[in-house]
Length: 400
Ligand code: PLP
View 1 (cartoon, rainbow, N blue to C red):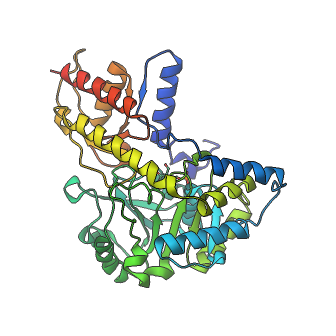
View 2: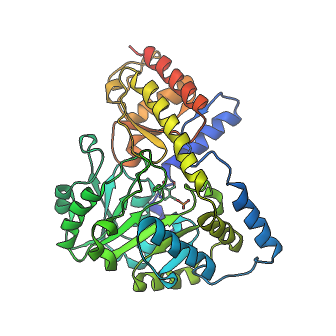
View 3: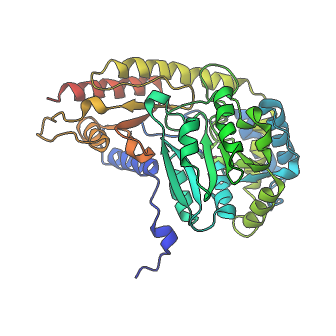
């Protein structure tokens, strides 16, 4: 018998972290690796944010804060939600966490009873199903097709709901597909949800500002304010402000959920880092002009990546509306033979072939619950994207 608990034995390391570590390992061995796995902005945290953190240290903001975060940070989050998202929360209905990931995990931990079902539209962010499993819940994967733009439809949602459904997790723009829901699509989903009052809605809005059309990302609560008492809004500063290492996320929602999150956090991590909170405060309340600049850079990379990928026979990629990934259909390569006599039978084979033959590191679609695809990051210099595509094109040309 293992001394590791069942709830941990049933989960696995995040496949994207595993792929990133594998790429780093090969690089250490001296291999020439083009890393297209990265899930974080390649920009540095903007200078005014770094400076605010240094100043907080010098002012002595190095002690415990309130578990849910400093009043100033929670006020800044409330202001951000009001001005950017038209969502109105009191600071007491907001909790700062150690990243959005922590907020999502804790939200499941405070609500999911053994056997409760959590609807996870696929392709999904790799962590959702394992987090549900770690909380003794049952992830119910709802596969959304490329023909539907990888988006959940009202019919799929209706068919997946049971009396045991506890949560629907919505992530728009999505990792890995970049799919972004319109206000009308959110309204159609909420019409279904309104018929099933047992279902809570968790919105993972972490990529809201990485969008290519310049428009604001609509929220399901903009479409259906009636859902407010059962919706938990999750967001954070990691992707928008290039602050992945600082670990600040947050949740806003009904007071019973926020109170329970506060209790759990008080008995586990306590407050997120005081210095990081000061940095996040500066990020949310300071100059926002570079946010649009970042999105513009991602857009150029997306366009270049799409152009090169779609020119490779056997690969195709639809145009993502946001986030910083391309989710590439590699069905056209299945059944082809590699120079050493193997046959590409799955997206995992394709990703392994690209890694071993040309040093291009990607993540297989199966990690996101849908095959045959792979995810290619565009959170890297355009030259790296070009080199990766050049190598993939050569590797595809070598197939028979
Ligand atoms: N949600 C999604 C969809 C993500 O892709 C990520 C990071 O990869 C996170 C949440 C985690 O964000 P944070 O750094 O705030 O924990």
